[in-house]
Amino acid sequence: MCGIVGYIGSKEKRGFLINGLKELEYRGYDSAGIAVLKDNEISSFKATGKLTNLDAKTADFSSEGFGLGIGHTRWATHGKPTEINAHPHWGEFSYVIHNGIIENYKEIKDTLVSDGVTFLSQTDTEVIVHLFEKFIKIGENAFSAFEKTIASLHGAYAILLISKKEPDVIFFAKNAVPLIVGRSAENEIFFSSSDAPLIGWAKEVMYLEDGQYGWAKCKELSLFKSLKTQALNFKALSQDKILAQKDGFRFFMEKEIYEQSIVVGETLMGRIKDNSIVLDELKDICFEDIDAIKICACGTSYHAALSASYMFERLSKIRCSVEIASEFRYKQPLLDTKTLFIVISQSGETADTLEALKMAKNANMKTLAICNVDNSSIVRTADFTLLTRAGIEKGVASTKAFATQVVTLWLLALFIGDKKQNISQELMRLEIDALLHTPLVVKVNEIVHEKIRRLSKRYLHGHGFFFIGRDIFFPLALEGALKLKEISYLHAEGYPAGEMKHGPIALADSELFTIALMPKTLLYDKMKSNVEELSARDSTILAISPEPFDIADDFIKTNLHTHPMSEFFEMMVITQLLALEISIRLGNDVDMPRNLAKSVTVE
Ligand code: AGP
Image (cartoon, rainbow, N blue to C red):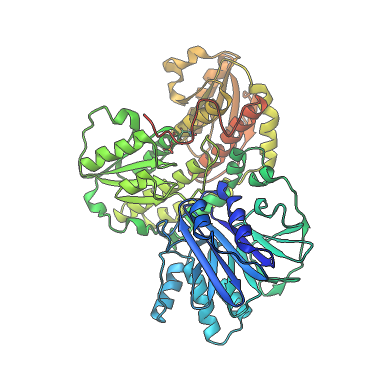
């Protein structure tokens, strides 16, 4: 989730751009840059690391008087977090910044390179500015060149482009990634990824819709979609900055639950082509030499690992074992070089996971990190990395990071199955259909959210919760229990549903709340009998299922799906919202729960 700001007007531009990017820091980034076009000269500055580095670099730069400015904070998805890869990217006379992922950038880049264009960066973004200038050079005017460029792009983008060809115009485009246009009483024009940077500057804003693009100059703004002019739809801008950073949600965790639909889409971007999985990051791994997988992680990432173990054995047809990193480190494990060692970590800094990774490296195993933060310690240590692309996760209780980890692991399971020729084309088609359906499945249904908010009042006491599920719904039950524990401080345990009669059912009574994950695609009848056992002992049951279950005290209806992972992700959102609403009713700090840290960098 990069950040974008833009400005057209006569005020000093460096200050607006840098301060605007600071308001977007909460979105996470690893590098930043600005460009200012004034008196037909473009000045550009870029820096890796924190914005203070860019601030220092531009300390002697000032730009009073009419001009254009664009600024960008980058969260690496293509190419390492380096100054070269930081935005803006430039051609001969134009500069561009971009948030999102250009799915077809490689085809475009190959064509441009064959035309003789020299690329400086590893990013997908750079193709935009070179394509724009290519159209200019064959005679198109600037806006037509921009229009043709945007029409050539597939994927998610929020783009600002400035060019000496039109020194008082900013070209913009938006698809699947937020981009806001603002304007002031003095006819200045602003752009931003969210409201926060515009507060105190813009009087009114317009939230661009997917597929919209156009050009802006002082006092004039033209908006188009599919070549047709669009009406401008400005409205007054709220002045509450903190609310703006949370995009109007009550907590960052709530915002991140709602963001899952967008970020899961970005996790998939560019990784599915026709009926196959494309993971260029792994092109140098020889899977013929791999006959097993071992995954190491902690907490929520461990639950993602457990979920993946079912997929590796079922889809890739490769043995998979999963270890909690803090246990793995001291058990004197038997390791062999024919096992692919995978670590999963949102932060990339978890001490136990990092040390487990080092143990695998010392045993000469091939190591792969599934991580959300490029250039983190775990990424820098692993041989290979797949980034989950969740963007920054502010809530200590992990939500979108978990969702994108499981999606990334699902992609990997299919990729390995294909490499080892263990997956038929027909099965691959079914799996890819379900994968592509996931962004829609994790989109929050606000009616369901409201129902969860209402019923959460019944779950504020009792002596504990069982979250129960079978197969892949067992790790999901563990994850649901952890979510609830860490933000409500109520006791909750996740259990394989078949384990009840081996002891836990002794706890069953009306004050024990059972959250039963009852998918229709997997072992429904087995689950039904497990829940009946608990109900017979008077446990209070909340059933989550596509099929009404009359002995449940509460029931949340889910959709009928053809694939178990679709049920998995829909129930994941419900358990996340349940934990959120119970915690809110208890008056807890959802984003910063007691005793917890976002990244556990100590043993
Ligand atoms: C998740 O809700 C927890 N905050 C915690 O269990 C977390 O998943 C664990 O500490 C691992 O962190 P990592 O993914 O950054 O390695």
